[in-house]
Image 1 (tube, one colour):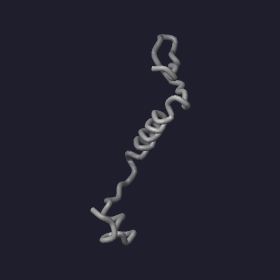
Image 2 (cartoon, rainbow, N blue to C red):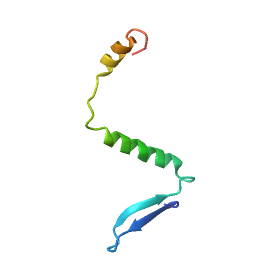
Image 3 (tube, rainbow, N blue to C red):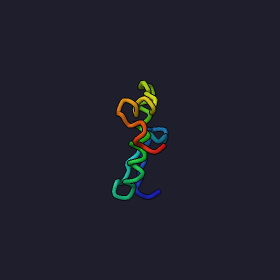
Image 4 (cartoon, rainbow, N blue to C red):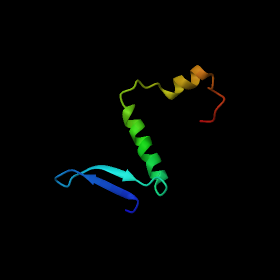
Length: 63
């Protein structure tokens, strides 16, 4: 894939990548989203119904 260079260790294993952001801005956005999602895996979750109720949105939004 053009616009991506890999950095390898002494055994030839890929350890990092350099991404041309002009060519792959959307790809970088996806990578950032994945990293944020993974970093929040262990955070306490709040049910959507509870959030809507707390915001007073029940009955105001479709669905």
